[in-house]
Length: 81
Length: 141
Image (cartoon, rainbow over the protein chains, first blue to last red):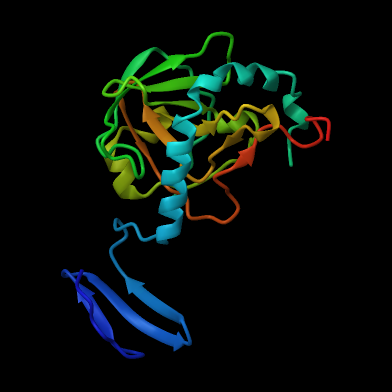
């Protein structure tokens, strides 16, 4: 992993068209500004981990498939939380 | 541009290729999408590469009619016209019905005609990875 030191208001460029700016630093929080083309997906790593873990957990539950019939008793129109 | 998609899927038993695999599980590329016995809103997405890997998926619109998200242009480019896409979400089939949840944050988009699918990630705080399909009220709580 490449590790760089940057100060507030400094930036770094990734490839030709991605610019990451250090907008602010407050204690252990860093605010980043990111300019990237529309087709580049940018998301918090923990969201990615959450979906990955959800996929993995769900795959372990296929054998419980019979439990789904219990859900049939739910009147669909009332099912709003 | 509005890339909204919403309709009830009609599933044909079909091979679906996921060029990028699933999120965090990039090794799984080929699945069959099939109906589950006695179920009208749940299907099985079974890996063809690993018989032990399969996911129950559901149509999110039967329990959340206003489920809504936008696809990126680059994602739409991977598959066919948005009118032909079906949207599913994965289900964690807990052993206790009230703990059965759907992952609204990582919907699976499938073009059944083209036999291609992908999973996308919705970075929207209103959607959780653990949405309970049986409300506390219905569970007798």
